[in-house]
Image 1 (tube, rainbow, N blue to C red):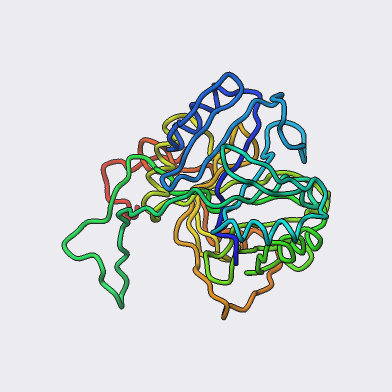
Image 2 (cartoon, helix red, strand yellow; image 1 turned 90 degrees about the horizontal axis):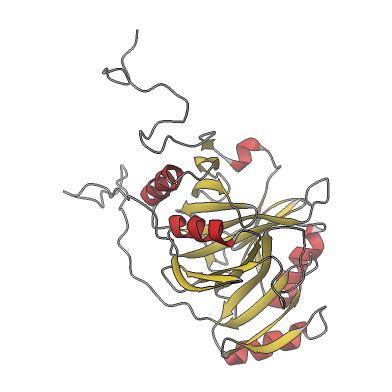
Length: 323
């Protein structure tokens, strides 16, 4: 029994028209639209809901303004739901109801976020990905690497929150849902995955000295590094503002590109994270800029020329030519 991954997230925002453009440009498919709520889907059926900030019936907020109100995790079977329901029955805000025609259980985590579980509605997808040629393995023969004109995210890969107590919150996910540690910043940050076998992290909890509580970012998985670049360039051309990227994380090895999100926090394209098993030994790191990014482009790339923003382009010469 283990949680399989993120099935759905619910944002709240005070500007649904802007969010409609934002998530459409991001590459999600609009599946429903009402005056107080938008529904989107990733390629594998993972859902993104954006509700009006004042919509009735939403879970309580962990912070003011646009943010995430709910994360729904997928499980394999109804029997899993029964076992998890027994584990969390005494937790604050215990929830067991039918939502969209299916059973959903949950509670409120120690940071004030609504956590839900349901039998997964995601489906397997087959996508073409760019092979990487290395010195030892030449997997791409007589074939150029792909160039993506935009991104089409496969799923919501992970969520990251600022928490007031990283030890208590990480223990909540470990003890109730079986999450395991991948790496950590001792007493400051916890990278956690749903099961022993899986990507580097599905959840990252970060405790700041200020004890800030809320959303840091939501990360969407794309096919490969080429789609990180192609998606980021398209999104930049559409006028959305880069926070940082593209770049590469040393801790998870993933390539990334972060943008500011009108629905709260940041939003990330990422690809090529480490895959771990039960044999993995969690590491400890001291937080800092070089741990966050091995390299990163400050301000992003120019959406039209593929150069760093505000940097002069070549003047008809080879880029390596020296004066």
